[in-house]
Length: 187
Image (cartoon, rainbow, N blue to C red):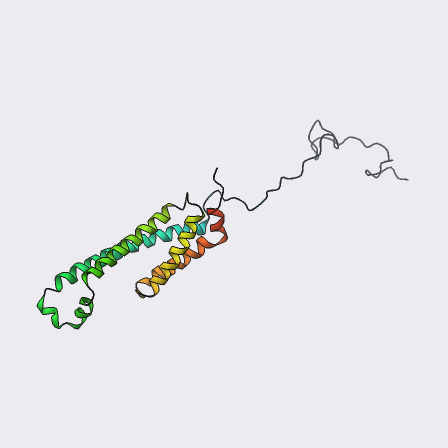
């Protein structure tokens, strides 16, 4: 029988290890309480800062607000111009102006109000990203989908940027990181 095996319970007693070789000083190995197992976290981890794609969706909402302000200015300018030009007799024969003059000034001012309201709605949603709950998330997804549809039909060329931004907003907010952010517990 060999007494040189350190794991042999019937072997000769081992000399104590010197401190500094893997054991804390003043403590012999095998004494004290065993270490507790690591604490398990249940459920999904709670994000403490806004995820990057949710933050990008908020920035895209602010870009849409800026584009809406430009659209409001453009619609207001064209409504005022069409209203003033309808009284000019020299433009009665211009075919391009007649296509524009077919829109009533009331319709153009209604577009101004709609673009302004849509921009204000985007600003409100962007502001609510820090404190909002799942209702803000769902509302933002619906806003993104409706904006994408409106960007395709009436305003194809100008609305292309709106369409791309709106699709990205709906995807970023609707993803798992967006759900974790808006459903996080608030203490």
